[in-house]
Image (cartoon, rainbow over all chains, first blue to last red):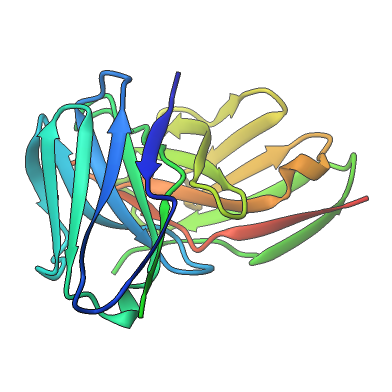
Length: 113
Length: 113
């Protein structure tokens, strides 16, 4: 089973709202990732967690705040977003931080008004 | 900077024909490559991978070829089916620490009946 689940599937929020995206995997993977994907563009890495510790932050604005409560869960907290943050947010996981094959979830389609 | 790119943004093929999707990379130190398929409204789906110590790897109806001399990667799909219609991304693992993937710009494959 190579399933990564993400909730919600769609999210509409105002620029003053606070919301969270959730990601879950039960493959025993110890590395999890957040990507942002704009329409007709490739995914862009945002954050990497390895063994529940943040290992990579690709200079993402502080209005995006990741959290890894345990090895199966990954959250992305959103606050004071801008319309240009509207995108598909993808979560992925891999066996650990050195195993390259990443398995992606279906994504959360975010619209910021 | 170094990047991974694709020669053709859109590829149209007849059902039953073979498809070839190309990818150029510029980082000679990259040692691992992945092909992903992304259907509309879904997350990227792992297709096949290859390490730099190999020239060819075959899966079910798919073959990946790696030419390190010219830094070229290709994905061959045999007997293309309508369900193969999607955007295909190559991804390159950046050398050094951390499991960072850099994605190519993507190729839209359209299968005509």
